[in-house]
Length: 266
Image (cartoon, rainbow, N blue to C red; front, side, top):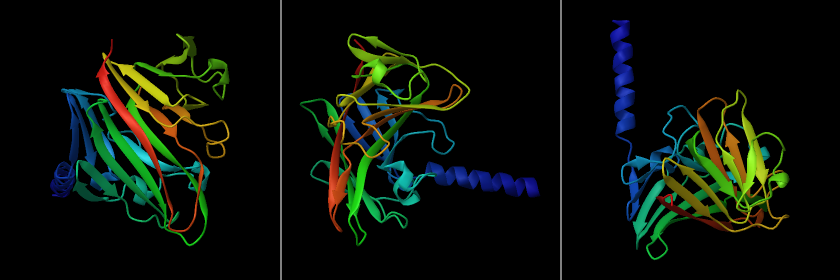
């Protein structure tokens, strides 16, 4: 009987997960799926029927999320309301807008505005951080996209400037830093001062993200415009980009836009 009860409980959990509300943003052959009940994460990105982002199911291993920077303000795990909370959804004038609850710990609220630019072929995501505290705060925006441990990552930076040095095998090709995914038994993360773009090529598709190019003194303390995290084993990689470290008065907000392009590799 205990076994039957346990199986029933598992079935109920699976059923609830399957019923989670999702929203889609489409442009051409590209479909982005967002799940408001899971922190408004991007839980799927497809070109036709081909998936690009990680579909692993254990926590912090799938989809694309958004955090506040620097990480030292909240350490680990990610802030629940912003990363896993239920976001309110409003659809209006071609925009899909999702808004988080206020973080009890940080007193921030996050808003994610999804739209398309048909002329440019981009899905446009504008992230906003609202200071709901009663004091002046400093914060930076931070997008984290998890992809399979495969393919090649590129961004515009000298290989010798990537830090810490020696953790990943970057090569300079055609003037940009290139990393072919490999496997190690430890977690690895590097930082770079890029030029406002980051790309990932795998299985004949290229995902390119474009965002504001930061000056050397603009990232949050201990952070960087571009970061690449490789989880141990053959699991997943995080493509990370950050915006400028900004002072927010009580009630004020910052906005930061990332343009996503997904197309066949040339």
